[in-house]
View 1 (cartoon, rainbow, N blue to C red):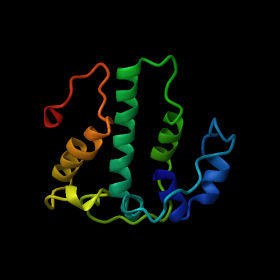
View 2 (view 1 turned 90 degrees about the vertical axis):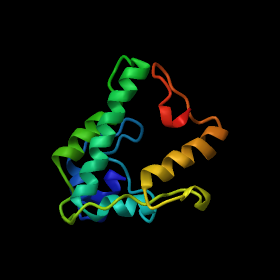
View 3 (view 1 turned 180 degrees about the vertical axis):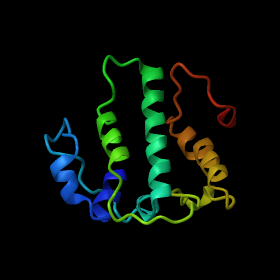
View 4 (view 1 turned 135 degrees about the vertical axis):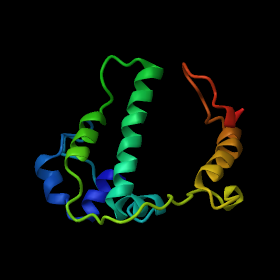
Length: 143
């Protein structure tokens, strides 16, 4: 989503020339992906949303380190650093609004995105066995 925000806001040339090399493709940066997904649209709309997602991504890298104790830093880390230091050139700068809820309608139980995602994870995600916690207690909202 972060690289797509770049591509959609005039940053493709900068990515191709300066972004870190992707270990799996050997090319700089990542390709644009799912540009019309509601959450991707939300991220690319303004710098506030972009920065929020970027901060979340750094926290997820930290969480990955804590849970799995890898020998090397996650491959996305240099990309996150580059994305932090090189925001999309033509991204807007407007006020925050909550991200869209990208889930089946049955879990959209209120206007609060967090409440909806808790319902989604307690329903569909839990039923499919996708809630796994390694070296962490299960959060109280999922018990």
